[in-house]
Image (tube, rainbow, N blue to C red; front, side, top):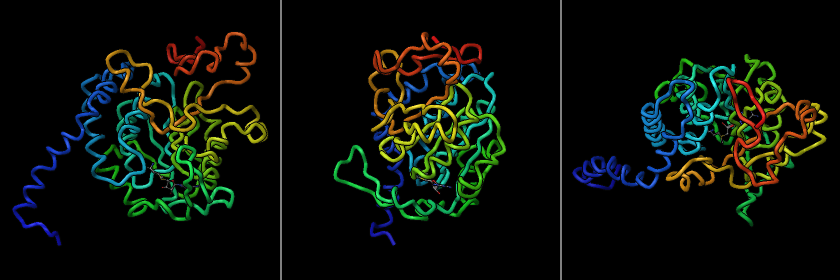
Length: 323
Ligand SMILES: C[S@@+](CC[C@H](N)C(=O)[O-])C[C@H]1O[C@@H](n2cnc3c(N)ncnc32)[C@H](O)[C@@H]1O
């Protein structure tokens, strides 16, 4: 029972939306940056629609416990809007917990006519391998985290997640894939992917995702990773022998190791400064190694002039082209 007298409880309930708005005010430039970024034009998504979408995603963030935040959701939505409609493929989420991120991704998929495959055990993490059980945060020196089997179990299991996405997102575009990744992802009902959002914490789980999903990712598209702070996870993206042995080519590397890529880079004034907040998400971008080898002289090396997103190439008429 609440300790507050009833009239005070009413007052608190009345004031809550106002307090929320005031607390959101400093984030307004970030939302405006998302709204005016220009992504989504090829899908006919207007700034007004993006504004409404952002409001909905922010509102949803108060309604369900999530391992990610609305800023990250807007970044992922922006990414889905970036992919031209001519590039066919689905969006995959690996690790949904209670479905908050799934709801946001589903709204973007509905706007762009894509399917969202939501993959999870819905029973939480599998048993961690011994080598990954203790995780040292690369930016939190002196602290470590101990992963446990069953952590991040979805409230209400698969049905609970379905209800959350039904209430807060767009259930009609979602396909739910239940089970541990090493048993489910190889037979995923999708041949072509335009975005993977992986939020599975354990390096062993991320390895399972890479093994089966990377080959299906379209060129110029990105595998987003929610653990840029994890030495175990980021290390996978540079593991030469694993990539050569399992996928037959060198590793793709990783953008945003540590605190992640900026939330919205490449923005013009006046939003530029807000966009540079770290997203605590990184990604690996897919490109054709054979083609890179053949056209090697034309490839711009990211490291030579400092990283800028999209510097190495861009979509032109739905196809990936070097700059
Ligand atoms: C941190 S939570 C995801 C948080 C979620 N994206 C959000 O924004 O609220 C990690 C999720 O990954 C799932 N997971 C991790 N490894 C898995 C595996 N190998 N197979 C299936 N699910 C896995 C867990 O069940 C859990 O739901």
